[in-house]
Image: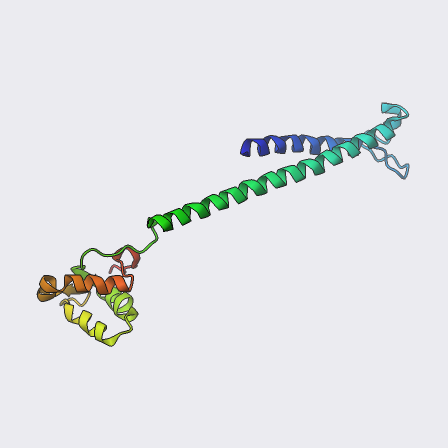
Length: 182
């Protein structure tokens, strides 16, 4: 399809150049003779050249418009097919459960360390139930530097599945969080 459009575009370029040349060669209608050949197109091409050049101009103009319509419709079809293809691919990915790179991945295990800002903003800030907030805060404690929340030993042993459940409920993923490194 793209090859056809390119070939038609080249033909259209040739038609445009020819049309420009034919228009420049024609004699001015007011008789002033401002054509490229100094106004002597009748003597150069003969007495009937004005009508012949007018006919050539008309044919080239019709070719120009026809090529414009054909190229436009082919381009529109190509674009529409590409958009339909993209839509079908995304629908297939959704139906098959395929996640894209930008999709949030579900956690399979509880993170050992979470950046303090991420924990407070992207985790605690998203949880609306105060009981769940308190529960999750009991599983993590801030380290001495204050930069990270670390999973407590008790939570690491007994509550990893619950932590994963809470984090997946709010669609938390370490890959989706922008972490500021100091």
